[in-house]
Length: 121
Image (cartoon, rainbow, N blue to C red; front, top):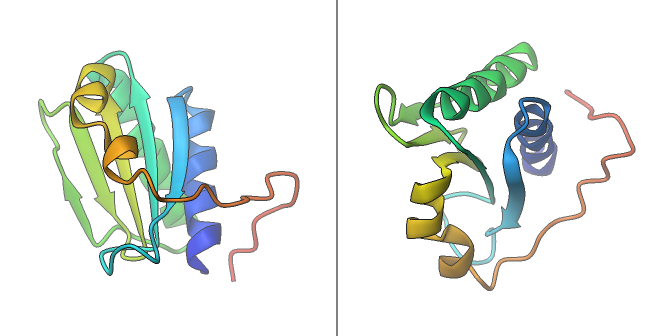
């Protein structure tokens, strides 16, 4: 799956679980770590876990498994590493503290073409 389609699917899965302020940043020209960051937040830890769980479920159904997951348990920040896409799901307080959007302030938001269906192949 193309990285932008993977980022879009993660975005849609987060929105489906009522994530707050979901952002997608194109960091492909800024780092070799990933092409896209998907950043979302929620007001409490169970909601953070529900969002991350939905992202993992939707991407697994599309044939994509996370390479690595950080922050399970009582964490207020879950990181889902899909190689070309890294999904960050924060408790709102943690998101404000780390402020990834400021750290990656030069990153652009890609056009996710939300009106068209995602191609999984």
